[in-house]
Image (cartoon, rainbow, N blue to C red):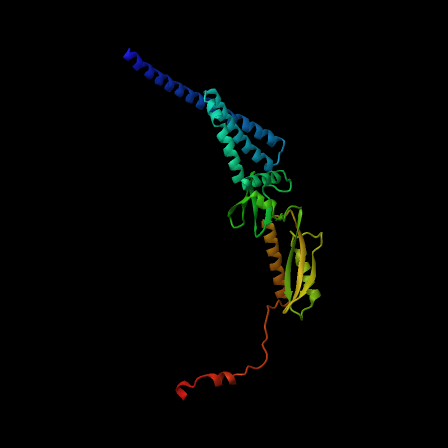
Length: 293
């Protein structure tokens, strides 16, 4: 009798252990199978369809991320159900609900960034590869997700920007249109022939093949500064990019400077002229005589 009582708990523990192992294997096997099929078959198929219909990358990439997360969650829930561990979900439902409320209050910024991300992703004027400027930063959009946008700066830095920052601040896209207007200010001396200086600037704009003839390059007198008359040049380039913008402007400015030098058009720098007398008698009288006493 004692032997029978001893064997029963042992057999019960063994049965429970076998059941646990069996459930764990079912959980791992079913979950891995569903996750593998989803990631290796379903996600690539959906991605290919989105590419065939030429869906914007701003939408395609976030959709792929959501699909992957959904497949992972579905695989987890299916594994728990098939393995007989479904009771775990019921037991933790109340805890999960309370945790969800607490997390909701603690993650208002995250939710705000998510909502902002939805607006950014669905905005056709805001896409990967754009050159944007906001606050005192600028760069090329490298990736857009529902939480953050990653911008590659021209100093080869990668900035992770919360989406809410981009939706609550003014963002400039200098190359959103097919043409971009560039301006630059030149300062010439007061004694110079202003009309000739303006002609030189326009001629050098026409001489640059990457500057458009229409709209026509133009020059305006913007300011009568202390040492110079400020002439502001206006010209346009097509299919602008940040590299094109910097290079074309640099070439144009250099060409104008060389023409000014060749034709003796002065570009004086600011100067100060001091006049009047300085009375040093009181200063000398206040100095101690020292060794002369």
